Amino acid sequence: MQKKLRFIGFIALICFGVHLAIGSHGEFKLSPVFGPGAKPPDADRPFKFAVLGDTHAYRGNLKNAVRLAAQRDCRFLIQLGDFVDYDDTIEYRDFLRQLNPVSLPIPVHLTRGNHETMAPDGGFSDIFAQHVVPTYRTFEYGDSLFCILDNSDGQFAPPQLRECDQRIETFRASNPSGPVFLFMHMPPDLPGLESHDMLDTESMRLRLIARKHHVSMIFAGHVHDHHDAMLDDTRVVISGCGGGSLRAPSTSTHYLEVTVRPHDAADVEVVPFDAESRVWAALRYGFNVQAMRYQWRCLGVTMLLLTISILRWRRRADRNHVRADAADEKVAPDCEPAD
Image (cartoon, rainbow, N blue to C red):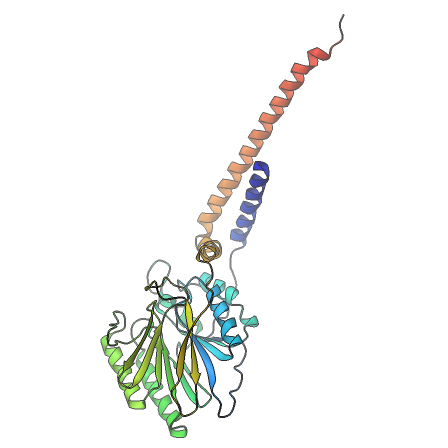
């Protein structure tokens, strides 16, 4: 049994060394939306979409939520940011490998969170912004307007809210009663929930736009909990429960399912789903991401362990060979014929 375990460990070290030596190279395509086109809405019928926040390293959760949302007839899913832990190429490659955009049943729209601005050394990074330009966008679906904004550093870029304001005005000109939904990572200041990361001036600017255009709902993540509050006449729902450590023990991993009815307020339902095992996610994250991030250090340690394993194997083989020779010498006199 011990020999089998040693052999398995030796093979695992070789595979790990090959994995490190090959590395993660080449270009990757990071975009604001992945998957097929959204199924067209039925005329004058309700439609549903899903909202998921803060999956972090537990990327299997995003895949599980997308599958469940598609089964429940959601037309698309909007992720509220912090879908990786650090803003570097290795994280994004692993994210795309886990997400597998080709096999997605519905589109997934990405929002930039503060972890998509954070370098592994703790500084600021802009790899996401290099691939996704601009980092905010709007689209129409089912006589509704969806505005995905970027406040990943606690504020909105100078042209962002102005362009959002103009886009809503254009939409209202042709659809006066159509609902408008805003999505962002960091929530504004709310009664009973003060935002310590979004600037007060930005919260006020957002509040003025929501009041001016009678925005239907605002969705945000960042806080690993679930909150539902009112900002003047606009409903604000915070849900950062996609995979990060939850603040409240009573809160479960979930996504939000939003039902949009013509000429009526939208309904929001909390839908729990099976979260990926944290142990498995941590092991996968360490193997695929951390090992590649510290590639040469890990490769050096792996080569050292392989060398020690080979030396120990050779030493054990030599010792067994010496024992076999000693046993042969001991038996040899007994086998000699008498004079």
